[in-house]
Image 1 (tube, rainbow, N blue to C red):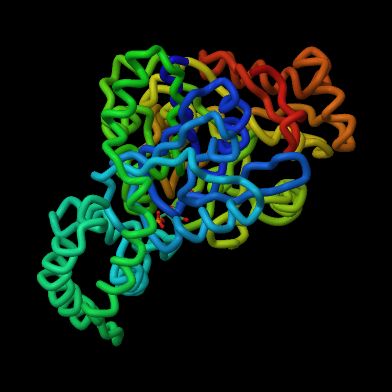
Image 2: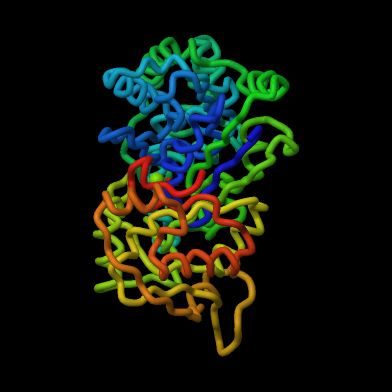
Length: 430
Ligand code: IMP
Ligand code: MG
């Protein structure tokens, strides 16, 4: 802090929610700056699990302000559902603000997401079908509706009357059968706007004032570096920028405020959705990672995640494009119980070494990982992991310590946090 950015280094689902939660108690504000309800951030408090898609992860801490910044696309019905559900569990959710510049995910975006995925065939990313891609397409195409429009019925009506017939033509042309009804969309969205209006404000101005008062701000990334629209697997990633620099753009604060960039990586690799995956495993290893992982099913889609060994080629790129100052490694406990643990330290393609993670999906799909093998470490109960975490990194099994040290040296970045279980207590270092 003052400005700490937390980003995912792989394909999302690295366990950012837990890391952010463990940092949030020292933050004055938590800011979501990109993505939308495609994200699924799991926060555990005691035995209670919360799965947020749009609400920033600090929302359960009453003294922490939570901002949904301009770079996020907001599905209003989903956000209201999260607010209502969280209130029903005893949290007031008065500590939330939404940027008046954030774009709104409309019902036709979800319809188009499904149609586009079908038309794309083998180019489909396997999206979350939350309308994220089409909402960002409309933002860039300047067909978008923003939060400031949603809360202004006259502007909303005028925009819908122009835009909806155009979207109907696109749906028809894409072979869709849905009929859009301007009146019904208007009615629903005026109601959403009325309920959300008290939260809508200029969040960048709020942040500027907070930074001037030396407040500590935590920027909460969603998805991960290799899902980033500019630097990730294309076209198999998401539609927003997921790297640390996006915190500056999406939140509307100058880059000099981003003083600390913490990257979160799982101790192995996993993803939901399509695309080449050089270290992907099937069979016994995959079963182990998926089942011990417990949560190796997408938070948003509940699809089983594809899993594989840790990939340092991927992570070297992630360290570079984010300009990391520190690492958090999660799910070290999930690897426990394996005899051998492998790590990809390089790739080979067509008989030669590949230096950098390739842009071309054709080349990436021919890459063969070069592995380094490590001795595994024994399984422990949750209570034993928590006891180990309490004593710190030195108390970890020797093989696990060696594994972490190798990652740290290879990536030339210090590991500041290691997570060995779901609960807050199963965290080493802060
Ligand atoms: P979209 O973001 O719904 O358009 O999906 C694009 C790709 O990103 C798909 O492969 C999704 O599975 C993946 N994806 C999007 N958001 C997340 C996330 O928060 N965690 C993991 N994968 C995600
Ligand atoms: Mg997730």
